[in-house]
Image (cartoon, rainbow, N blue to C red; front, side):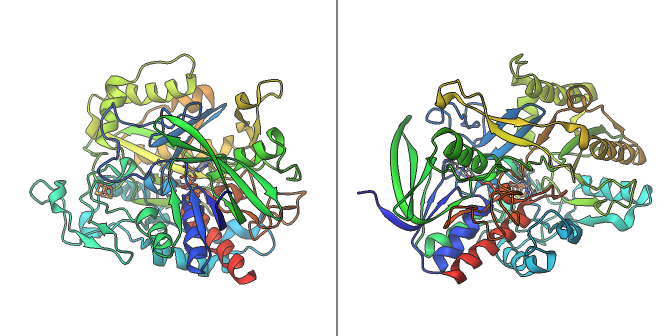
Length: 527
Ligand SMILES: Cc1cc2nc3c(=O)[nH]c(=O)nc-3n(C[C@H](O)[C@H](O)[C@H](O)COP(=O)(O)OP(=O)(O)OC[C@H]3O[C@@H](n4cnc5c(N)ncnc54)[C@H](O)[C@@H]3O)c2cc1C
Ligand code: SF4
């Protein structure tokens, strides 16, 4: 007989870590099934032969750090591993603007309703702004751009889930030396260090200065008795005698081994693409959850993510400091009526070497090749990497994408997740953000390079996919109710970015975590 749990949580990113922690604190027997590895500073990929890529076709062979999915019009980047997107993310933990909740959400969800849940996330993740005595050059350029353009009141440093040492500064002897990191033990018994501004946040922090989910929410869940199984890919969910059976494949010595578990409740937290794909397969491919409504896959958003590169006249050193540090906020629509958020951005030094020397043009992956070549072109043309300024941004795009499974006449295992995405309704907003990037570059004596991927192919790259299983008041409008419970399936919940029904317009993880805190609270109180 398959083992039985009170709750099975699928995925261990922001939704999965929060719910598994809170439900195990409430005394429930929780099992977390996570497709990726359990990473640590000893195993993070670092050189070109390391496990970088998650391969959907052959996860038993390639189950690396980054899941990069190419869809028509949008390339989506996601993390894979215990801790989900927190392993790879840029540490920005910021609340959504109040106006976000004025429309598009179920009646029960408002900004005021989420305040206590945002506070819980904050207590766990402990974000703070980069100390003023150690701001990187990129922050100074962004601040200068805002001031020179008359937007200084819109400028603000961002809260980062990083542990800083107030004594550290750029004037130190060999400032980035890992030996400068101070060691400490966090409240969950995990050893961490303080930030030495090495710029490698996307690649995993060698000194564990980033307050990632494996070091807080998941650590707490395990202390409270939750079991976390890495390298378990969930394939289907089916109702069984008032409970749910979850079928998975375990990666074992380059083989996939089938297994299943039964639970009273299931929480799907595989991320916007992962959760939507899993439920689409359950409804349309295997027929195990046929009652899921017609809105599954809809209201998908790329969160208006965009990167522009400029060449400045003075050194920027994009590889120094945390990846993102500050923002200029246009989300009120007060400038030209478009809602967007501009940030400074950075690159790990390692990526420069890979992009510049090792990646080859691949005609089968035109969008990916264009992206890589735009970057490589910028690098080579500038001839001086230190003067490159990456300007990041997010925007309230139209959230009108649709995820679906490819053609039916293909063998079931070959039906791929696809995206219908037409940029026309979001185009003016993205163009306004790109124009602001250009204006900021100019205001600081730089020159923005033309974003070829957008100009030529109208393709976006997003690390912030949202929607697909959106929250709504009824099954005619969405897939889950305000608690995250799937319409028509009691005790089947979704808690992650897929339930967010519209673009947030800034970094989404804090809002995803807050909504998941609320789902967990309602599950435990209703119980
Ligand atoms: C490079 C990068 C930088 C980013 N920077 C920021 C930032 O600074 N601030 C911010 O707010 N956001 C940032 N994000 C976005 C943030 O990481 C995501 O919004 C967030 O992680 C989404 O949380 P989630 O719970 O929806 O999904 P995820 O965190 O993606 O978690 C989903 C988990 O489910 C697992 N999974 C998927 N399918 C299955 C399956 N079938 N079976 C078992 N497990 C499965 C995945 O491996 C993953 O661990 C960044 C993302 C990237 C890629
Ligand atoms: S800059 Fe380096 S030390 Fe600081 S949080 Fe990022 S990876 Fe860690």
